[in-house]
Image 1 (cartoon, rainbow, N blue to C red):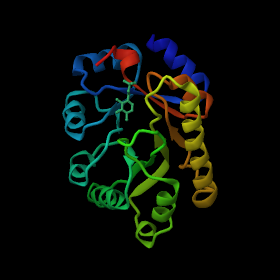
Image 2 (cartoon, rainbow, N blue to C red; image 1 turned 180 degrees about the vertical axis):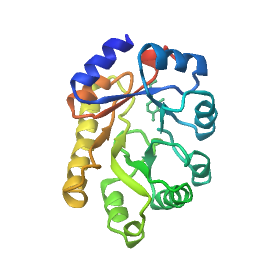
Image 3 (cartoon, rainbow, N blue to C red; image 1 turned 30 degrees about the vertical axis):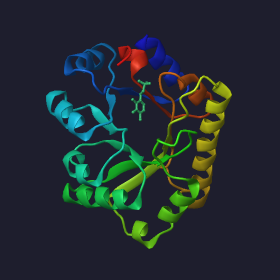
Image 4 (cartoon, protein in one colour; image 1 turned 90 degrees about the vertical axis):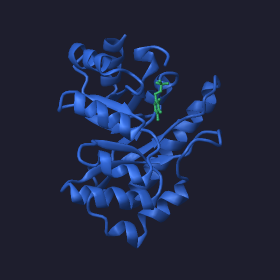
Length: 217
Ligand SMILES: *Cc1c(COP(=O)(O)O)cnc(C)c1O
């Protein structure tokens, strides 16, 4: 299963984030060894911290869940990509902690594309306000690499497709307006176990997949 998934994703020039939340270290290590997988995603900073300490150092740890400003400090030394940036305040804190660790932290802006009220994320207008603010302009230790979004949890594949398409449009707008020459701004993190094929068709560069690989949590 994982090998097929990996080759299909690679053939589309996308990458796979294996979502390992709630999974024990032994299962992560198995996938690391057997499939050569190096990118893993966690949604809780504390859990990511514990797993990072217990697993090989060349794993790229991606934080995919909502991040509170007071948790940034703990993951700042090693996190490879934060998918879930949804405020200027959070970006400022990531910048501060990155500076303390003498590094630049890669980030994605998370957008609210689903119909559900509960999912986090920015609107395009909110993102524009952040990106053109003087407060953002002075940040030197965060690098905005693209966008992330979660589609509605529904059987209606046309609805899901519409939402992914909307995220791709946001990406295109921001790229044209703020990052026309940037080689860093290139990621569209979208697609999970139930909708990854649609996400790939709509231009995803990064799939975040858990239960399809590990079984239901
Ligand atoms: C859990 C989670 C995933 C993976 O979900 P699956 O349905 O298990 O593939 C992807 N993205 C985020 C933000 C998640 O929290």
